[in-house]
Length: 95
Image (spheres, rainbow, N blue to C red):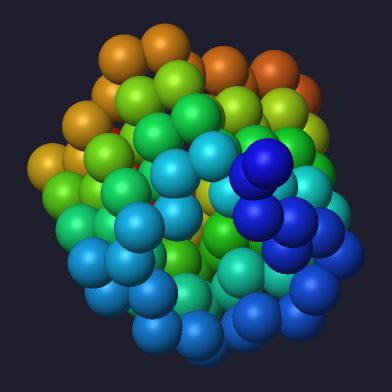
């Protein structure tokens, strides 16, 4: 059973190199979090606020971002395979 972290306020949290594969973050506030080199394979990031988040070199294969706020997020070096971006805010996001 995947870990459920829905609807939480985790602003500025440090998830550096964390294994977060298959975690359900739906509706969670992850503004300014450090997810550098984190494993987010198959994570549910639907309606998540990831504005100003650091996702450099994160593994995002199979992650779902429907309705997410990715404004000013940094995705440089991140791994993507199947990447779902339906109704997503991408203002000044870096890929």
